[in-house]
Image (tube, rainbow, N blue to C red; front, side):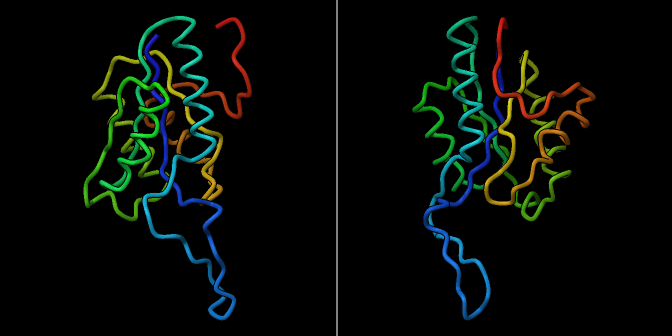
Length: 150
């Protein structure tokens, strides 16, 4: 079973600060980390791989700074990491990101299952996985907690 996990690099949540004078959130500088909900999906993919064989690939849209998040996934035992990067992707909204990831999945081609975390902790958005499923005309199951008898 070949599994692709969609991952997002997010800021280190513990390092986020609030500038009360400017009334704005100050995001930390630095490489960030893998979105925790996506990391749960990576862990589930690795459990499925252990049970059924195959490969686990992580895929992300970002810049060269995103490589650190992908390397963290490789350190967990993921087989492959794919970074979709282009200056034209900067500022993409959730629907555009879904289409970009769907294009990456079409090009990859050899997968049986796509997993993603339930939401991103930086934007609290849960739109990208649905946008990917819509772009690929595939069914989706949202907020899955556990796989049994797979």
